[in-house]
Amino acid sequence: MAERFDGHVVVVTGSATGIGEATAVRFASEGAAVACMDINVEENDATAEAVEALGADALPLACDVRSRADQEAAFEVVVERWGRIDTLVTSAGIYVGGPLAEIPAERWDDIVAVNLTGVLVSNSLAAPTMTAQGRGSIVNISSMAAKTSWPESAEYSATKSGIIGITRSAAMELGPSGVTVNAVCPGNTLTTMVKEVAEEVGERLGMTGAEWLEMRAADTAVRRLADPSEIAGVIAFLASDDARYLTGQAIEVDGGIILS
Ligand SMILES: NC(=O)c1ccc[n+]([C@@H]2O[C@H](COP(=O)([O-])OP(=O)(O)OC[C@H]3O[C@@H](n4cnc5c(N)ncnc54)[C@H](O)[C@@H]3O)[C@@H](O)[C@H]2O)c1
Image (spheres, rainbow, N blue to C red):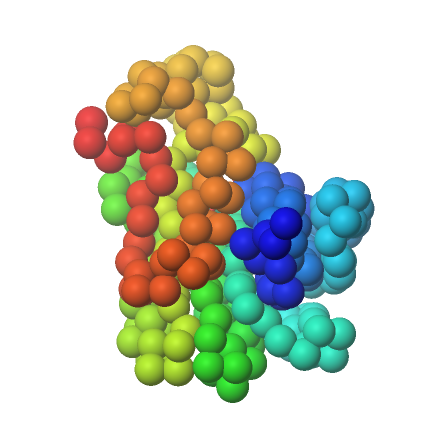
């Protein structure tokens, strides 16, 4: 039976763990070849093995998205190997937080380099191949932190809001060439990152990480946190034929937490 992404080439940054890993596996399960780019070589190789175990082509690429040279080399290998890029998903990201008055300059520079410059460079490197094809989909992973926020999270919120700015401008620029660009804004999703955030934010609020996660789940309309596969499902929809008229959007996939 034909699969939804047969013949598609998908690039996922941040594919070693969490949402990026679930996304790589989801596309592979629907027929796509997947280039997996991450700084964590060991876990990224494991994702590529999971992709291959589904009968799909995988290309694990060691890549620090902070480095333009790394990204250029990785995208070049993808185009050499498959000659096209149908979908780009930018999931590489980090969380840091702390009081506004105590933000170290190096920490700010680093989160901007990963979450913002990294995403901008990925978009700019995928765009020429997609526009030459006359078709493509870019899905940038922002966060509900772009739309709401909480104390001591200025760095993260700023970078995740910036991703929506990149998305909207790129959608306008690339739309005439048949390329859609959207952002997904996940709510709390059960990955390594959220468990680390829970410990850190929980400690500040005088509760355990588990208690903080329970509180966050209670604030959603659906009374639970997301599984990474549920974010991957929406990403796959945005890359599908059903979403060709959907562009420039920042879609909350947050179990309704934004309503509370
Ligand atoms: N988990 C959540 O609750 C949540 C909520 C909203 C948004 N997000 C966003 O989703 C994305 C994925 O996060 P996750 O929850 O899956 O966390 P995660 O930590 O499991 O995944 C992040 C991935 O990015 C990779 N990465 C980090 N720095 C990198 C770099 N310099 N170069 C290349 N790769 C790098 C990591 O190795 C890891 O594989 C992030 O952008 C995050 O901000 C997560």
